[in-house]
Figure 1 (cartoon, rainbow, N blue to C red):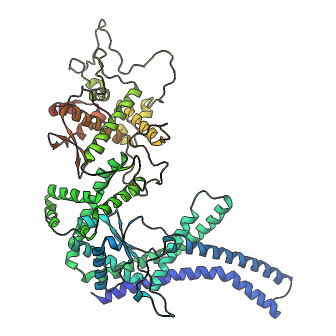
Figure 2: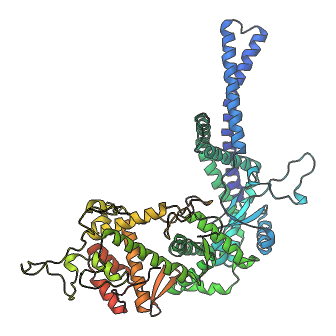
Figure 3: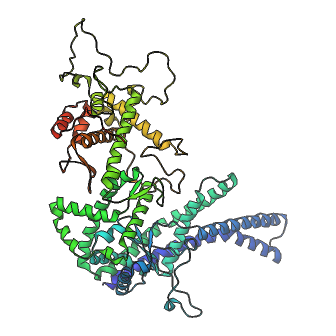
Length: 621
């Protein structure tokens, strides 16, 4: 350990902390300046120096101004001191549920010669940090040990911050790797214990909390005016100390990193590689696997165990990651927990709450699902729900079950209906199997009925469902960018617009005693204790992506019902279709050819080669 580097970083952090405190001192000086002027004027009057009507008026004006400024300063100081600082939602880990983990952290702190963290918590993210939770709004701090209480007349040792660990680290990393990764984080408790740095951090967090208080909506006009003044003052002070606070944190991080150099330095290099790998696997698992389940009202209860399976699958596919599989024989860091399954379930529920906005606890319409039941409970239900929505939109558009009016009703929704509707007329085969003739017809040959005839040419009651798409410009405007609109046919644009409108109606429906039937992606949490996701994983799907997903879902339903295919789970790509035990990975390009070019040929060839019969009806529920 290079003591010079540690001391240099700590000294830089302390100097920046003093700069932050000077900003606080200047603000206090400005607040007491009118009071000082009032004291001078009153003293001058008592000594006979400042006498006369003009000085009397000045004394009254300055005195009233001083009182107002002091009251305002006192109010701002109370808000800054008492406002609840923002904290990261975490899963607390009591010492009784992870004694080995606490023992490892304390041993590491002793080796680094820094105070041990006061508690440990887990977060569903690939990061670790220290978080100060000593504010009174966060509850009483942990009771100090007997040796932490100073003698009479001396200050008590500050309570150490809480160590927040990313839950994927515990499941993917080995014990030695976790120790190496946490070393520089725990080393940060040393600079954090310095009084100047702690005071500067409290001041900055108080200002940030005051800005949040001032931005709270729904206040009366008078309160809004006071909050506007409070917010302006807090933002002004934050701007004044922002650079100093940033440099202070950099100094603390530099001192902590330098102090941790002596702890498992060689293993830290390998552990940092595992950090990047865990982040990639976690992101893929959330966006490809967990998100479809969340949309169905189910939350996977073993996300951390799933990231291990995802990264193991990655190591099997990628030759560059072959060495990572050999690590699985070592002791995983999750063995430091007494009940890793319960902790995994708690962090999985928190991940669903943070990244999707789901309820904070299980309830009707929001239930856990394990990985064994995922294909049936999530994949198959998602496909059939999307296929049902697709056919509802086709019904609203007036699309017939078959192009040939002479063909009997198949008795249920078919994939052929979707293919025939999205195919361009020039590429649509007729009922004899040949492409439609675009040349002049014989006058004696009867003209075929239009593709989408009106349901009733006469007067009729208004439809129960509003039209989903009325014209090509309106339909094509559903695409979020011009590139998607240019690559869409008129029919696919109209169908995409209808799907977007249908999905928007489902999400806006409130399940009130069965008055509205919510779809599988309906926002089920309107009356629950949850809000919009603070950290959404992905932007809202475009109309083209919605149409692609729904057509693929219809193909998968037809494959399951007519060709004996099975829904499956791919740890890296999410829901997948298993044909003959093999994953069908070449479906998307053929669906895009149908949507963007109106050419059903590639998809029909793929269906024929896979033994899928598009003319057969499928089950949607």
